[in-house]
Length: 262
Image (tube, rainbow, N blue to C red):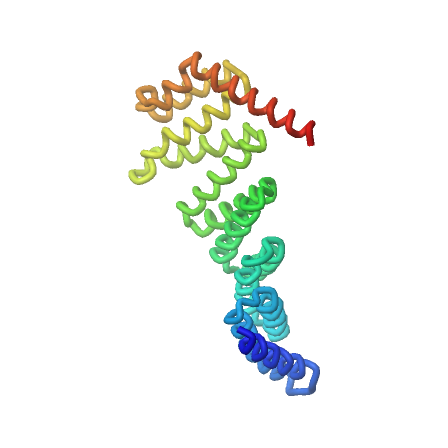
């Protein structure tokens, strides 16, 4: 490990020396990039994730000097993969740079993929507002590339976080839209009752009985089989829904009590 760290430091010094010296335009950045890449690999072998990540950022800067935005974006992704071992914040910053570059060069699928990853990193840290924003951006990008399955997965995440943040109308709109989109798809139609259940639970959280009744009528029109499902019976059962609302209110009261204590 120590040997690999020493090798990495040597390659990094040589790269810095190249950048500080003279050379034919562009050539010193090519030479430095090759050395930074070798240095980063050595630091990875030594499991020195912080040093590896910082060198990958230097590598990205070399590629930017050469106007090689795709290579620069890939270097930022490599940096993020190293930083994920030690710092979610640093990993997020590197991935954000990668997304920006992939968008600039029109690689929307790659941008979507890493927006989704940014959403997952922020979810891991319980930064739900930020996670929701990234999943929403990923969904739009996947949709623009007609990657429907990935777009729907990201939309479900947006709805999940919206519900957790008590943004019930937004969550309802998304769940209902996914249900409408899925009903005529042979592969997706079996998930419709689950989306309608989630939408219905969000309706219940609004404490509006009329809205729940109207929603159930709409859901039966959308899916005539819905009224025969356990999901429908749960939403339509006044006893169960009353208890669910009591549970929700009890949990909220407990959270507020805990907040007051802290």
